[in-house]
Length: 136
Length: 107
Image 1: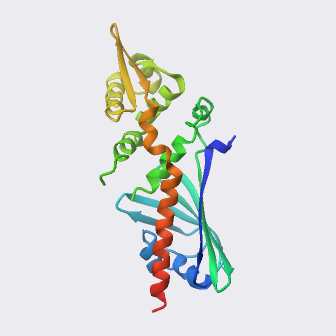
Image 2 (image 1 turned 180 degrees about the vertical axis):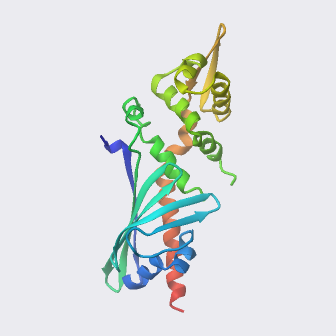
Image 3 (image 1 turned 90 degrees about the vertical axis):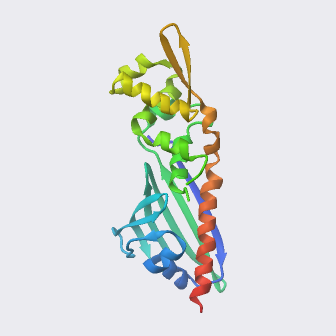
């Protein structure tokens, strides 16, 4: 059983003055990904491809889940105990692009912990793991 | 990295320690003996973990006769509660860098 308190989503979206095709390159070419996201070992826009992102605080293990060239890209984002999915959506907007990033995290295996939890407390562990993943 | 959260993260990164802490959160105050009975590790190991948790402010201890009781201190977690803004901050920062890169790609 998974309840709302066990998932969380962070969404960031922005209108960007560049075409989707160009943003797609920045999202999928390893030498470009390394310029803005984190250091990356290898990336292929192919479902099932595994790659690793790294920074001085640690590493994030990723697996490509969804590829729709120029439109959407999803990969897992696993760091420490955090299991999450990062989903990118590119929508043409005028001459530019509406770029949306949604990250959803899960903590599926702690039912007892959550059942006994007090208000405000349940989300903590998921929260902690999220924060762990972005120490930067 | 010098970050006030660092100690909390490191303290809770250990699964045995985290399990002890979660149990105190779930079940309230416990003696070392009671914690040891269900932890699957030795009492000295449990005591050591509790010491680390105490150092991070995550538990407090209370002596009563020969027993030491431990309780979770949820207030120690306060710095971590505002996760949404931190996570959002991370991605906003990445979006900034992405836009910088896109501008450079024009040249």
